[in-house]
Length: 296
Ligand SMILES: [Zn+2]
Image (tube, rainbow, N blue to C red):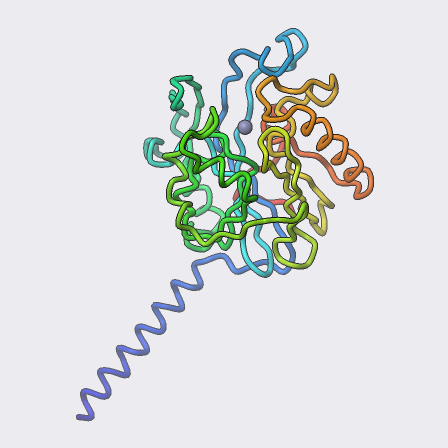
């Protein structure tokens, strides 16, 4: 009897130790918010007249595809999920050359994205697994922001009802890739009905409604202790020239709304002194430090 008890005790201690090691391997939540930038590829611009721009007006027609992780004392948030699903990215050894992927949309339009690393591997390098992610928020529903949404279906999805309704409509709008986010249908979901949604309740991470590009389009505000406040743009702008030359894409759901959202954001940027990070701005994004480095 004694021996059985002894063995059980030893097993229990071993199990507890193993569990501790498992827990210890996960990155602890930080004392103040951190913003990680992941490289989710390079999207070829194609026909830039869709943005009411000409090649001559632009520094580059390439777009960065960026995904982000906010680590906050009360949990984690992934902002946007890339253009190429992890499953499609070959498990290339680190340092291997990036590959060019052809994305075919339901209306047969095609896009080309060059990508080297999965979102999951970059998340792991920062110390997190998909199961550790508290919240998922997408700036909007287009394919180049949803690729790995299914990977995060166990997180709580923060979404505007008007956007969710369009995503699961019988006939979704163009530029959507429903297979990449189908699992979100059954995710725990917070339907955001206010312009601003304070994710962790302390004002440091806020989703701001900025409709026009899509009906439920949002931008991400993060207040960082050392870096200062940052707004991550979603696709309120794609190219920096849209901002300087005041051009609005031809394929926005509502151009007037886009113009109003841009004006409102300018006021907000002035009030807060926040920097604006345009997610698809290739040259600006190239200068940002990438995970596992972070902004705090
Ligand atoms: Zn986009």
